[in-house]
Length: 230
Image (cartoon, rainbow, N blue to C red; front, top):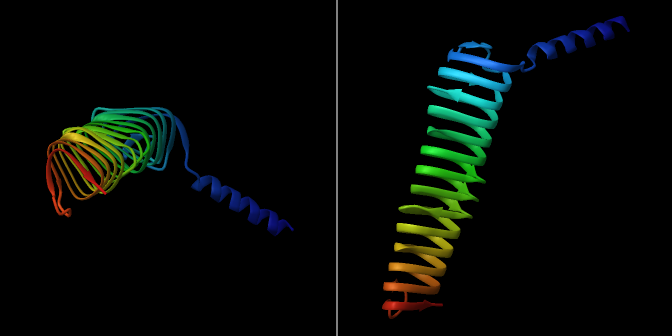
């Protein structure tokens, strides 16, 4: 019995040593030159970074002149002059470049933004995601798959688009279901409404409204002003 109790005590002590330590504040110059020094730390409060900070989870306000990294989930507001990087986000990232490896629930705003999956908004010069179920609002917007909206000068849905592409010089979707509004709208297959100066679809189930309308696989494939595909 004593051996069992001792083994249990040793196990509890080992678990405590291996647990991720919690802190209310952190100061970083260049990780591991930071307080706390461990990149496995969990911050509940505020972190201030000069060049580069690194922690396991961040909950609160994250400020950096350089770059901040959160290896797991970031919940809160991150502001960095150079770079914010998190595994997943529930909050706001503001910086020159913002990266979320997995899911982003909130806002990324900067010159360059990337998230694995967007369930909120990306705003900036360049926005890139594998899957968007929210809004991309940039000069250049790219989504592998879109189930929301893109608004910018160039909007690309590389695979499928369910939603809207708006206000663009060029909108493109490989397979689109919804609405395209821009100067040039293109799709391999489109089901919905294209409105612009030039509308092009190889196959269309819907309506084109513009100066030049092309449905490439129809017998009369070019028609001015109005074209119907079915």
